[in-house]
Amino acid sequence: MNANGFRFQLDHLDAGCGARVATLCTPHGEVSLPAFMPVATRGTVKGVSVEQLRQSGAQMLLGNAYHLALKPGSDVVRRLGGLHQMMGWQGPILTDSGGFQIFSLARLTRVEEQGATFQSHIDGSRMEMTPERSIQIQEELGSDIAMVLDHVVGLPAERPLLEEACQRTVRWAERSLQAACRDEQALFAIVQGGLDADLRGECSEQLVALDFPGYAIGGLSVGETPEQMQQMLDITCPLLPADKPRYLMGVGRPLDLLEAIRRGVDMFDCVMPTRNGRNAMAFTDQGPVKMRNRVHQEEVRPLEEDCPCPACRHSRGYLRHLFVAGEMLGPVLLSLHNLTYYQRLLAGARQAIAEDRLLEFIDQKKAGWGHEEVGED
Image (cartoon, rainbow, N blue to C red):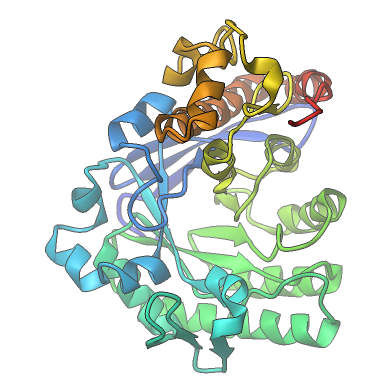
């Protein structure tokens, strides 16, 4: 592949489905795939230190070009030695381009062919994000993998809007390739197309022809059902190169990850583990546990008996107390638990794929998750 120090090695295909185990080599180390990337939007995973991230099993983190360009500024990050040095994280980092903010900050954004113009959500100042500027920011950040700027639209959406966004995404991808200067940074393209199978196919074909080191599937988890997402993965994954990584952006629930893995997806990111943790919800093999529920008030059991995370050294009763009392330790501990849960889930999936039993693994997890807790206070 084009980027120095970047290599994708396919290690094993599950005999029962499209899942695969692979190794992603980057200038800052190797990543065992499938992998989940905790989201360090502004150069930090909220409330979690880099040492705690390592202990959770995280191999690779995700930062955001838009947010880091606003604060502290990509030039400041560069002068601090790059994102790895600034954070103290020496493992691989992927940076998103700012394309998702075109969707999430739509009311503050104007999109034209040249690029997107944002009204800063911080101070109202104007910020222009072109494909070229996004690449410049990500090169200053020094990430191992940079994403092209793409045009993300929410769902449902009319075909003319999806088609326009798709075509613009391909044109922006070409401009991103031309702008990229750092040989040690791999550039991933992003397939758009909403829930339109033909557009997904056309976008995939055009981007694959440009020969990027990796490909992301974007424009999902923005309003569609899980079943619709799976349909788009069924269509898109077979169209992407088998010898390059596939990354499903912004997804998601544990079951969403497993359903995508069975279809051949390798990489994931989502704020769900930490956001839910901060809001008193823990992921477990028995389904989500809502820690503010009164049923946990005098419960001496941990969240999960076999979990090595710091939260599971305490009782459920203590964890509930932290949230009811408004203590900041509660959100920190549940964030750590959820991050650890996701990493353990992905490690289990990798082992199951290597043993040709991912479908059995998924059925086993789904059976446990079916016992969701109900009855909040």
